[in-house]
Length: 372
Image 1 (cartoon, rainbow, N blue to C red):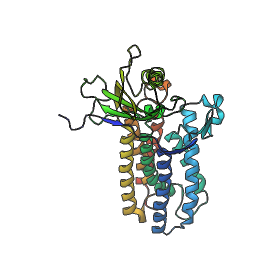
Image 2: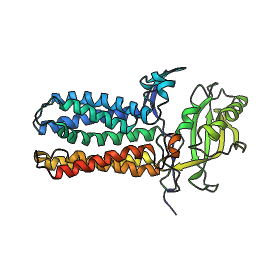
Image 3: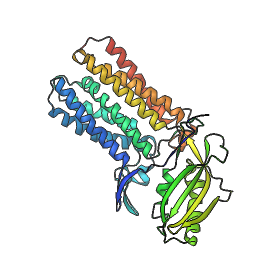
Image 4: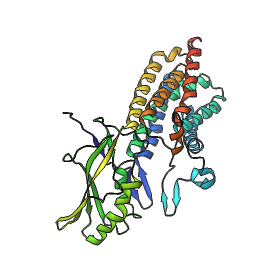
């Protein structure tokens, strides 16, 4: 008997919200990546006798390049239709109807990589001692690996970039999107939902391809009445489970939603819904862990060889390892856009191939070159 059967993940993507503004875990991890990386880079520059003020300049280059490159990369590689359907949505971090802060939704790591490569090329033109293009890249990619790990952790909290269904015991049923929807005033118009809890239902058999029986408990505020509750369950929850969130739940549209309503005490009604959640590979965590391993390995190489490091050596290792792992992990992930379903390999894999090839070429070149 397996100790772990599957994991129900119901973490909120928001740390807190105030009006239309919400601080999300993704944004926190994204910012934390840059802040921690900056401190490590300060340390590296001190050990190498380079001006610490250059770190401040590099940080600005990196932040701007990463955000712009990742956003434009997503639009160009995955959603080019946004250019003519919602051009302001490319750069604006909020929606107008209703007005709410959303952040930049849709960032592509390959676009971020291109942006960083271009920005560091611009920086290296200053011709600072010990900071030619490859030398700067060798230091920066160590920190990119760490930041990448934190960003993928943010994706996990967002329940995005999900893996394919799996029966593995570490499969994850992502339920957070339903909880987030039920707390949205556009769905819960009567504002009667108080809390949502998910419990594994071991009394029912598991289905094929990661289908796991779960019970959803929706706790309502004391002011809610049965008419409002039934209207919410049949008019909003059922469509969410059957179609809008069908990548997370497997609720047949033809079947009546299996729920019961009870009022165990004076605190309010509770709705119990039996349905099937879809356990998926936690692909975000796979990538996050691989980035942590890469960060540690590259940092150790820098510690050991920083005084006679061959330019491009760390950068080449980074390119080959990171994008090879990305290529392989894509086999465990769902495609981000429907057009990828028609491709032999998805867009993430297509974009990874030239970066892997570039890494191999740089590594070969670095082994033929003497240390700087």
